[in-house]
Amino acid sequence: MMESCKSSKVILENRNLTTLDHEQMETSQQPEPLSNDHNDT
Image (cartoon, rainbow, N blue to C red):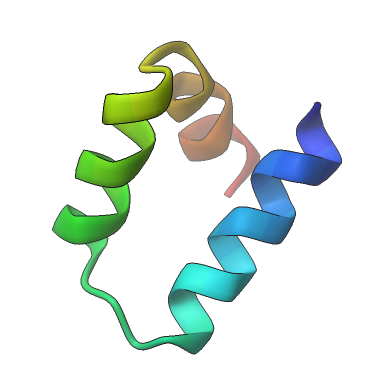
């Protein structure tokens, strides 16, 4: 689960998407992982 989240994050960052876009996309799928994502960073 964590790996998938990281992979998505890396891909989104590589696409030069803004943090807002990234957060919105993640929130649309599942808002919970966002907490882990922020803590992991």
